[in-house]
Amino acid sequence: MGNVRHEDLCRSNECGSPYRYRRSSPHSIRPRCPQPPWEEHLGFGAMGIGLTFFGWGVALAVTSVWVAPLLMRRMARTRIILVVLPLLAIDLIAAGLLVANAAALVACIVVGGLLLGVMNTVLTEAVMEATDLPRSVASSAYSAVRFLGGAMAPPIAALLWHAFNATVPYLFAAASVLLAALSVLLGRRALAHIDDEPADTTTEDAAAILVGDAS
Image 1: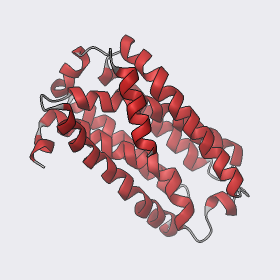
Image 2: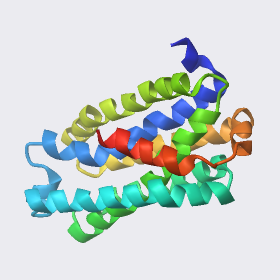
Image 3: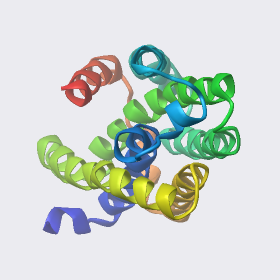
């Protein structure tokens, strides 16, 4: 756990856990609610849900493997993160407010996949370059913290859904994403050196990240 105490790695990890929470939160609501919003409000069956997240997965794959590396060749990593995270928050707020509208919610989910694909690659690349620790060590420390967000999402989303309504889990996720963006903004000096690293291996890394997340 000592590796997580590096300031630059810590800043990246603070971003990674809310990112993973946001990524998991739309999936979390359905299996744990007695009357999930997908079926209660939208009339979605198993095929509808499957096709929705198929579109989400394709969107994530495209931006993770092809779009993110192009962006990193033209923009600083911290700038990409500070642009994409607020966009993710806006997408989550829209999903929460439009949760009863099937077409709008599906659109928000697919758009979220596009944005998360960029974050999937850019944030992981940033973590790899954020510290002088070996890449394997940095990756392990980051993964440990990031997947805490994924583990937290299902119970938190379900509790918020039961206590309030289907909108609140999305708003909570949006707030966590904005806090992550604030952490990166405040820690920009510590993370400045990640913007100087070349992005020559990002396509290969993006493909490896995508395969690893899918397994």
